[in-house]
Image (cartoon, rainbow, N blue to C red; front, side):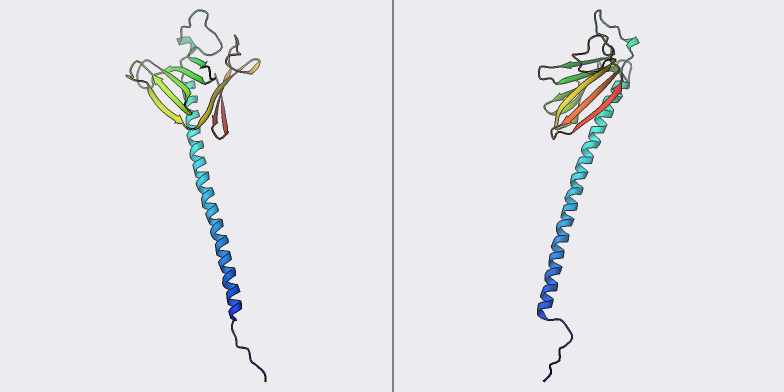
Length: 188
């Protein structure tokens, strides 16, 4: 007696096919989830870099708009390392403060603008006779270090090492808590 096989799939073949489709679905879902996570992480990093670029651009703008040395009367015995409208000071913990004397953007007069690291935040302070209180703007958070170096004829040096040589450029370095470091060099 001959048995005739009917056209179609057996139950075992159907179970294998459904299992394979299920495994493909899980793998695809995990891959899509990974892509979405990476996109969110990249988006967050882009926002951080954009804030950093704006902060460095603001520092550069303030340095470019500083008062000319011809307009500043320097006290006797003052250093000729930096332009007369700039000072860089460091405290005991090596936190640096960059101060720039610049024209007031709206009125006659000057504004003293300072950049400093304050409890992991890079802060911009502006003080003027017209302001009742200093204008304090938080530029960046999660900052581990804010440092400067100066370029002279003998190369890059720390502010404390540069004696009577005129600084040609300033290097602003910002280091994040995660170890990323950003540097910008600006001519003086």
